[in-house]
Amino acid sequence: MSKNFDAIIIGTGQAGPTLAKRLSNANMSVAVIERHLFGGTCVNTGCIPTKAMVASAYAAHLARRARDFGVVIDGDVRIDMKNVKARKDAISERSRSGVEKMLRGLPRCDVYTGHARLQSAREVTVGDQVLTADRIFLNVGGRASVPSMPGIDQVPFLTNTSMMEIDTAPPHLIIVGGSYVGLEFGQMFRRFGSEVTIVEMGPRLVQREDPEISSAIQDFLNSEGINLRLNARCIRLGGRAGAVLAHVDCQDGSPAVEGTHLLLAVGRQPNTDDLGLDAAGVSRDERGYIVVNDRLETSVPGIWALGDCNGKGAFTHTAYNDYEIVAANLLDGEARGVSDRIQAYALYTDPPLGRVGMTETEAQRSGRTILVGKRPMSRVGRAIEKGETTGLMKVVVDASSREILGAAVLGTGGDEVIHCVLDTMYAKGPYTVLQRAMHVHPTVAELIPTILQELAPPASNSGLP
Image (tube, rainbow, N blue to C red; front, side):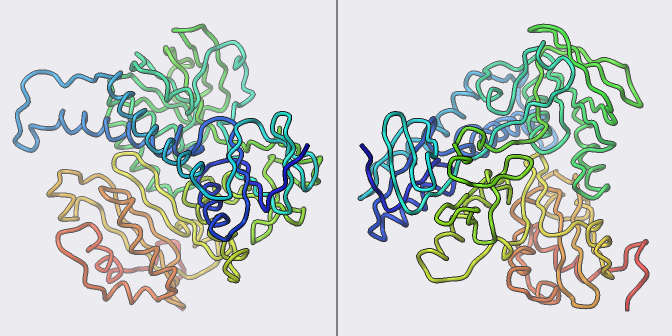
């Protein structure tokens, strides 16, 4: 026996619950299906719990630096990892239960728990139930990738998900992967007292960023005693629980690293391999991501894909923007698309990195004649006052059109400051609009107009037109 709805939403990550609320408010009947934890990656194993732990790690770091600020703390700074985990769990639980309560309280909305599979382009099974609808929205998220490196099947390892469950600081944490997830966990657990070694196959950390950003990040991680092994061309794993051995073919350092725990932080993959997409005729690309158009419609009319599973962004904010795009086109009569948005994200190390648009490297490769403005955080009054002068600020503009092409703020408050630039880019204003803005003193953001008054061609640029 089947039950018919106006819409079916599979998954309760950032896009699904809000879409369910909009559809319900539009007098549509909605079925929402969640197989495990309400709220998706962000609420349970991503943004919310990790940033809660980053906050605990920052508190420990600041306590150790108390004398720098004229504050005396008698005795050693100790970490109670069980309480760190309990705080993190409580914060996640509040968000998770809030999402579930909201969904179960919506009118015209039925919530199902279980694994959903597409039986056809209009039918979804959950256990022994068959649900039908003319509109199906896939919001199934992603998970950590497990690479097929030699020895991976012979050693215990952690991912970002299982890392959230430990309540002790590993004596020596080996992290494979020198990008966002690996660096956040690496710095966090170093501040919790672990010895940390980060192994990266590339020549530098976070390689999508400009080299000077990567170098600055490497410098402050090194200053905290984090071991970095770059150019690890071949990684082989061995050992047993409590004694993990990573054989690395690096240009520098010993050929092996021995630790107690291993974290794999080498990317993500979509949760699309057990959805029954073939039965519905929904196309995927070679990496398993659901193929969508600019309005997030799949190859099958009446089926949309939102969030991490569509390969259009791996962030909570891009998933929420996916919801906004779908709702605008479907309910508001507006024409919105993925192509409207500007790339923006943050790396939550301390200091954080806020990034929008193109890097300087990307802008130069585009063939544009560019101007670049830079300032080290050591010349930012607010950073000096806070005793957090690590990092730099950089803005890249098109010399001909005066368009802001991108920016990076690696420094205290960088994840917030970057929105000054992002908002100007969305407004399609020339850089002179932001250059002439009067910002509040003392802040980090007040230096953006100053930077834009000091623009100059990069050394490799051929000059102004």
